[in-house]
Image (cartoon, rainbow, N blue to C red):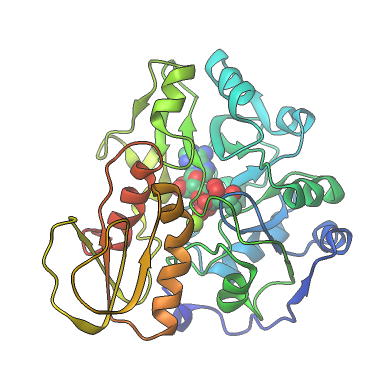
Length: 327
Ligand code: TXA
Ligand code: MG
């Protein structure tokens, strides 16, 4: 992974623009465009254009077996890509679209198989960010979009972070504000009788259960490979080592260490981020990881939070960025 293994032939001029019409035109002509959503920045291409979709995998150095989420702007586009929506999927759509929830349903098979990795299911969501909606409408097609980072790195929450990872590797960055939420969407599999939460995100398990009480959490080891291919890969990692700590942990003073958490730590750190709430923690985390890398920090101590609401997603990302990750 990382630059050493990426194709070096991929040198293109990256246009950075606030002009959504221009960005849409680049998508229409088969290009790849990074754009803001309410969760993190995505790297989008026409979902029906296999050649364009290949450029996403090449630019990110993304494993070819990790399928992409389709981003839609209206119900008509959902009907183009989804063959069957059961009652649970409909209830989630009604409650959470547009917003940070991705639903997995049976596919019509129309989306490029490069994007779906040959699966018979499709993951889709309707972003609420107005620029994302305008881009999809302007392109006139659903967009497949993973997070706009080099594979394995923290997801980008600013256009500058996209440029840092993908400058010279993609056609365009549609400039917007820093993303509101800062962590990726919740992914829920609605292909069976009972919805299965595959990835924690901004929509919490509690909120899903308010809509469909039977919703369960994916049991790791329980056919993870089939259910959610993305979960196998190590993710979200800064170059610095990520260490999760409880709030009463004693840390020695390190000038090349950093801390992020809600409570003030004991000790002196090279970089420090005290979040006011768990939402603020989620919002700041990935950009803080990148800031630590820029500053040459070697260890980032991250305070654990309780696994409620968005706290579940924070802990999921921390574990997968940390020493606890196995791959
Ligand atoms: O918030 C987000 O979801 C962002 C923004 C850009 O929308 N996107 C994002 O995409 O996080 P990505 O590629 O980093 O994560 C996609 C996740 C992966 O875990 C992948 O395995 C899962 O969605 N996925 C995609 N298609 C699937 C399918 N048919 N069945 C199960 N999981 C699927
Ligand atoms: Mg990602």
